[in-house]
Amino acid sequence: MLRYLKVAKWRANKQFKQQQKSWQPHQIKLLSHIKSIWFNLNTAQKLYLLALISLAIFKLTWLCASITIVALIVEFWPKFNQLWNSLAGKALILVFYASIANFVLAGASGIVNEVTQVSANHFNYTHNFATLLYLPPWTLGITLATLLGLQLILPFYIIVLLLIKPFGSDRIKFISQSYSPLLTAFTRFFLATVVFVSLIAFIDDKPPEKVLNDIVNNFENSKSIANKSPAEQEQAIEELSEQIEKKLPSSDNDKTQTKTFGIRLEGEDDNTQTVKQFLDTKGYFERSKRLIAMFAYSYEADSYSRCKKSKESKSIELNDYEIVEITPDQSMPYGYKFIVRACESAGISAMKH
Image 1 (cartoon, helix red, strand yellow):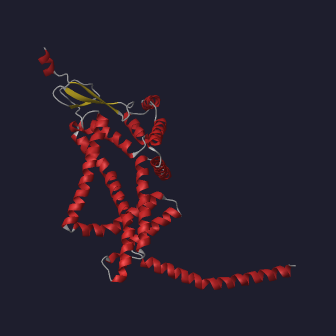
Image 2 (cartoon, rainbow, N blue to C red; image 1 turned 30 degrees about the vertical axis):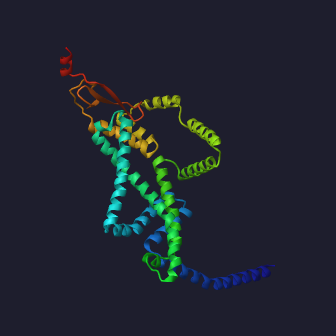
Image 3 (tube, rainbow, N blue to C red; image 1 turned 45 degrees about the vertical axis):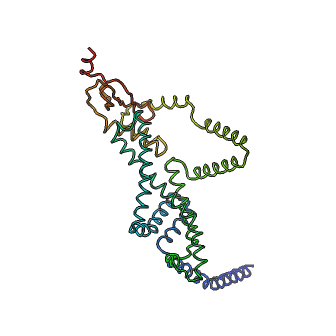
């Protein structure tokens, strides 16, 4: 019995070695083919491949988004310089980013008004600070949206160029120099979508999967509403608005949340509680509002004023007769209370008498 087992084991080892020898040329051929493809790729294509590997194998969305951003910069920076060197290109780039800056300025003005309860004209430095906070996500988001729009057009553009290539057209040099341009275009579009979803997830402080599900659900709801009759559309819109209202926090929840903001643990000072509430706040824009309120109180507001105010508060003069009094108050949504009150000063009191 032992002899038969030894013979079977010997035959199995011999067959395994034979199969290994037969597979070895195929492995060498496969490795050489992979190496040839790798060395034919340019730097941006290699980064796209690494981004796909990080997403498919390691499930790291943030790493995939970071590598994709680097790849997009590497690929499009020379084209950006080429566009910038022409007069029409400079005009196009300046108009594009000036439009973004205009929207950011208008949005920052509204945010400052929401936080301070007065016009942003009275908080010039705070308005500038809000613009600096909101400019990077707006610029990155609109630039990515523009790149996504270009990726939708680029595959058809490449197909047209490939169709007219047999007729002697070689107008676009970079397409013939890159490896598999059509596949690269589809990969770039997919990875740019991943970056866009990751940016929304970072701003809203949500998982990327939830952001993607929300986008798909909104698209399906809008598609189903568009196929209905006008009466059914109005009814569906009312149902959606009711669902949104149910998801929004009620006034009672706001009051309880405001009360929890005011709870102070023993041994905690104002700075510790401010940092803790800042970290508990979810979303980039909500945290930015807290930073805006903190900047208005700490840097722009005056500690001393001709108008009467409390000792722990600071003030901004609106005009000769009104001020905005800013007081740290952790029970408020952004950690500070902004109150418009009449200016009580010696000069105004003398005029009244």
